[in-house]
Length: 490
Picture (cartoon, rainbow, N blue to C red):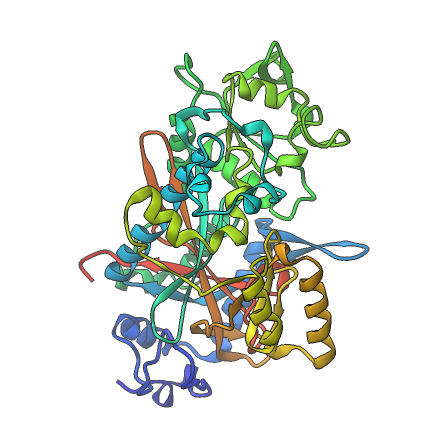
């Protein structure tokens, strides 16, 4: 079946032969997985998609599905952009992804246990001591502490790209407060409302079971002596960029959404204020950064934390999810050691490949980076949301010199990677009122508990809506797609 030339919806779609197109192969033919969907979408005109796109935006707005963008002098609330053309991942491809992200999550958990206990991987010279000790996310308070169930990274978000060779590569691991899962569920709901008929032709796994699995994970790490744990989600408040997600997850799990002022500590136990009096809290899914959790332990001016929370935690009277101090393994500098970390703790070869990465703290790699910035992506090791990234081939000579100076002044804070050619996917563009290729990545969500684990069969496909842009983060103008993982019989 020939592609866009015979299809009015895609007649203006131009495939770039240098990029991996997830719908069209090198002969401009529709890939097998997408053939049925392609035929279904050809029944709609570009104007139809324009109307559907407007309805989807209105639906997101009416449900409050938004995120905050922080500017220099203001905070803007934006609708999370949603694209109507779903991404499809077949069962064989997904099995590879799922095994790979689960492997990484287990290895990172083992690494965190070791870093805060025996430090064997450091003593054996596999990961350098100064990389750990210089990390802003390393917490001395966690040394020697055994978290409930032995779990640190209960929730992990692994970012993957498909390169021009058709293989998946891990861009980074997110294990502090990975966000975005609420949009996965909302994308599915929005697409079903807009184009319900397409689901009759594919058998895709549900994504609405995330909250129930998350609650089960939280309950597996309850404090000793607790039969039925009382779980809550703690949020920094309504002005946080991911507040919609915090409220969504609390509601979906059937637990309370609280702020720091709603909790207090007494005799090293945590209580929630209610109209019926204090109620003991056993597990806290936190969406507050370490340094703001407890003003008695970290930032004394934190107005969003709970005084005495860390003392209650270290006494074993409450569990914090994710564990404080996980950020030391979230550091992009640690990412460079992930193949060694997997082999060291699991005695396995990595299932998913890393993107080749240079850490600027190593003199020879710093020298290479400074001489090849035009061919590299420079990333700060401790930033998120796409902030602080410099893409070499988009920089002027003056900007390249500025990046060189910045990196040279603080080499520990930067890594560099080759400019990877992220795969592209047809995306409806409002301005042109047609489908155009746009770069995409995939964030998967993995849950680890003391007696179970779970990988959401879907994930957040993020889209760089600006033409040619490689940065997919919503804070940088990106959007998202519904992601279908097909069952085995397809």
